[in-house]
Amino acid sequence: MSVYFEADVTTIGPEVELMLEDNILILFNESATEDLKEISVIHNGTTVSEMIETGDEFVIDGTPYKILFVGSKVNETMNDLGHATLQFNGESESDMPGTVCLEDGIRNEIASSSKLQFRKNS
Image (cartoon, rainbow, N blue to C red; front, side, top):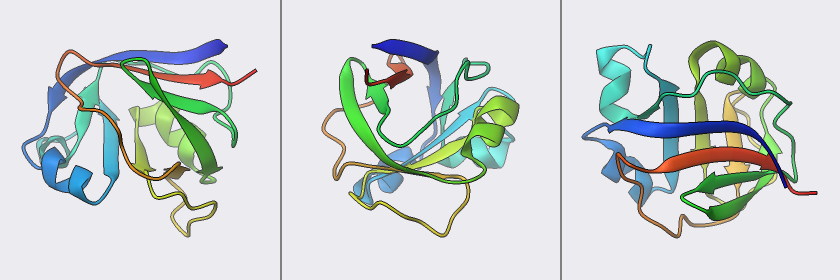
């Protein structure tokens, strides 16, 4: 498996737990505004070295989640701001261009020591 993005979580906003109840995880790098940090998982990642594509995996601390949909702006916002909205909803489409849809349900905790990855599944 080829890892093309790797980051350490540096901060978890106080509202992240509420977002996770709806199976939503919002990522930003450390350049996020204070308001965005309230609802986001902040990481130290820089750019993605390959395009995020359907069929790839998003990984939290070694637990993989299959990517079912990638919005048209995801690769741009990941490179510019380290930003994507991850929806663990099992859907294969979304109207939101910055959204990544993944298999249904987040299965593990995320902590300020967590490691995040995007990787090819081949």
